[in-house]
Image (tube, rainbow, N blue to C red; front, side, top):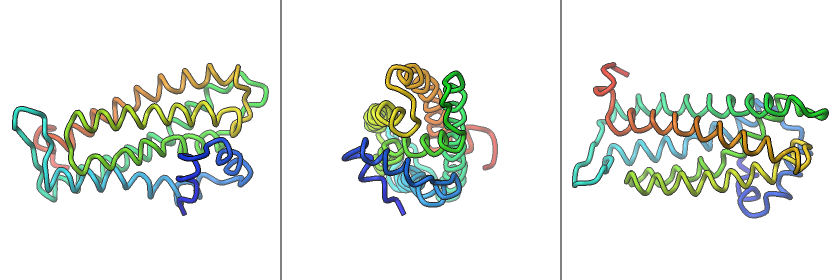
Length: 200
């Protein structure tokens, strides 16, 4: 369980080769990595929004009650799980023109592990300052980009030259997905269900 987290952070090239050799399934990936790692930002945001509150500057904070925070957390958690699978499908689609096109299974597994720094960056939501969360997102995104670049030739068997296009395109789409998740996060965690006009 979570055996690859430290390896991806400390020696990603070697870790990608190990993950490649394991022939993991999507079910195993979600059960032993994504479902657990996705809890990090969700639980931290739950604690931060109920105990501290979102600080948008100017001395104004927005704090959610437990029920709203729990409902928002479930929606946020599901959005993360869907986003990982979606990015895997995107990578598979972007790799369609290569003769050694990786399978959809491998692309989804790849996306799940690439997201690891983003999951870990969710720890800052324990103290939900907007600028601090934005900084954590930038740092996590940069390291995820590095994992993406290193992993494409090692895990997906696409050369560095060919993989550069896949890396750039994946990052572009990934940033859009991330912005959508951040928008949902601010709406759900920062303003609560009342702002959306629905009862979550």
